Image (cartoon, rainbow, N blue to C red; front, side, top):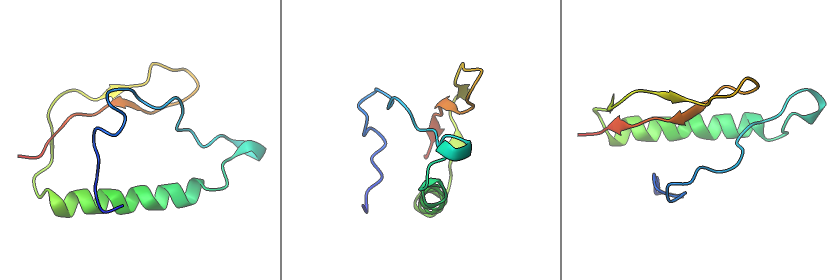
Length: 75
């Protein structure tokens, strides 16, 4: 839990990371968002200079909005 493994999926994205909606909304969605906020705070502290290293790639989907790829420069 102390390591941020950027290559955890070995080049393959997981099938689904959505939280659903309505009665099917994930009960852990708020907790996941809280963890993501903590993760971003760790990234900010560990790498003082983080910048985009390329274009932001969005999911080509009508139903969901999310990133397909985000390349960062930490040098």
